[in-house]
Image (tube, rainbow, N blue to C red; front, side):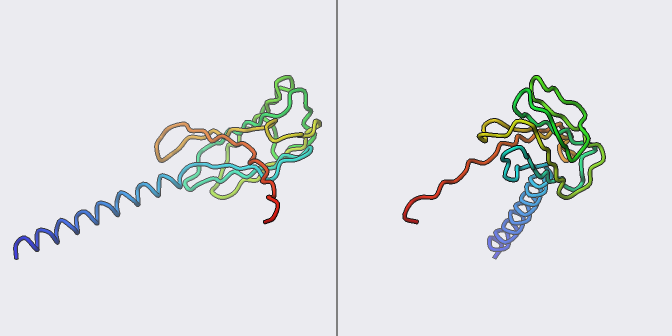
Length: 147
C-alpha cells in the first residue's frame, strides 16, 4: 500500500512540474515581437508587427530597399534614411499590444522578393535582453499542373 501512495505522489509532482514548465515555455514563446510582410510588390511594401503584452518600451524597424530609391510615402515618420545604401529606420517609442501596420511607397519598384528585407529590434522584457526579428518576403508558391 505504501508503494502505491508513493507512486501516486510522484505522479502528481511530475504532472505539476510539467504543467509549470509548459506554462513558462508558452508564456516566454508568446512574449517576442514578430513581423511579416503583406504581399510586397511593385512600389509598395506593407508589413505587420505583432507587439506582445507587456509591450516593449520601443521598437526599431529597419527596412532595406534598393539603393538609390526615394521614399515617396511612409505610414510612420522616418527616423533616418540612407538613400545611397537603401536603409530606412523608424524608432517607434510608444507601443501598445496588438498589431502595428506599416507601409511605404518607393520610387524603384520591387522586381523580385530578394531585393528587400527588414529587421525589427526590441527589448524582450521577459528575458531582459535586446532581441531582433528578421523579415524576408515569403517565396511565391507556383501552381503545380494537374492539381
